[in-house]
Image (cartoon, rainbow, N blue to C red; front, top):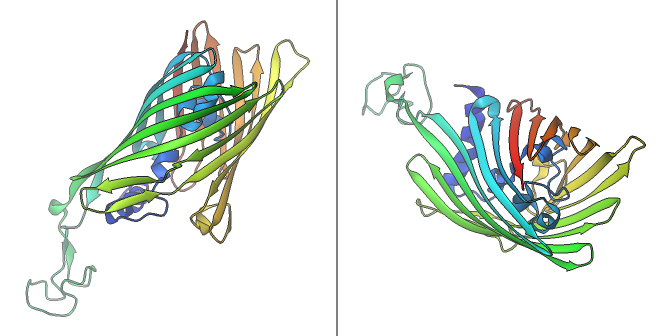
Length: 331
């Protein structure tokens, strides 16, 4: 079995069984290439991803229509999205649709011929029906079937200026998941704040603010508990004409005792960090690099007339590299 598909199976089986810890992992993959290449910083970086990452930041995002495609798990999964952000004076609205799809996942439940050491069914000998491949037993590869995992996320987000330089936003997300013959529905809410000055941006977001419940056709339920993002991006104009260097740091804060799954964990409190740099040259050429959960990121972008082309990369020793491409049309 492909090692990446093995990891995928470990990630999705808990959903069917109703596990709650890490239930929202598929909600945190992000949107767009800029945030990925900038160390995974999302909430503190206004852009085409703001409808997803921090609705309050849409006030400072341009009016855009965008599409994104990610090549993740070394190509075993496809992650695609389309979005629109419409800022106007002191308010903004955003829409987004994201799909994560994983095809041809092997189902080996019927492949094990669990007949015990004599290789004959219903004899009651040692090892029969114990769920383990014992001596004398075999796998019938003709009994291996395949299934797909699909996640759909629909976002509707709204932002409004609270007072000078400060905006608030709220996002509503609808969730539809399928794993083989099983399906699930859920609804969640995100609430954000964004503060901008000439030299720095600051943000805070409460994800899944009211707790997100995902109900499965198996009568099991996933619970995605509230978490926070908070960060700061400092902008420094350089001596070159219209060139800016931005440096950012952002923290993800969880309250579900993630222990070794996070970079820092004390009791129920767990924290991950992101940091990155972006060099903007005449607001036309962009170079980026950073660190996302301890994984190297890099990328860049080019603006041509009303189009912006972006690319982002993230390394991962276990799950393979992620490549993400985005195109945005500015009006």
